[in-house]
Image (cartoon, rainbow, N blue to C red):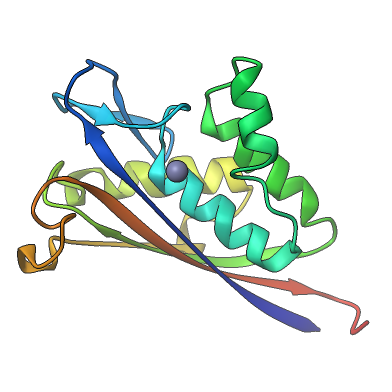
Length: 161
Ligand SMILES: [Zn+2]
């Protein structure tokens, strides 16, 4: 069995001038502001998409996602689906997600996030780990200006080629 590890990162600032909904991990959060971006700016799904791209070597965000955005496809689930397709016969073994922000409170939503991400990625809830921190307010994210997400993904394939 061959194993690969991917890393992905993404960050967005809050869009304080619009009443765009805050979508994280495909779930709408009760929050006064959404995140800035042409798409729904789902920073968690973007981070996962980037982690998958780092395994497949095929970038989705800033390339195919921009094209889709111009066609009016702003749901980040669609970008994640493209990345998942590029995995071909690679199986996802685990997804580790680290979220840094002051608001919203992530911990009450962790189980719901896990369940939705497991569903989207066709893996078990037990194969997803999510932690959240304010980082003691040291960064712009911890100060409440936006959200940063880091993702590490582990994938495996039966053949050794
Ligand atoms: Zn993004």
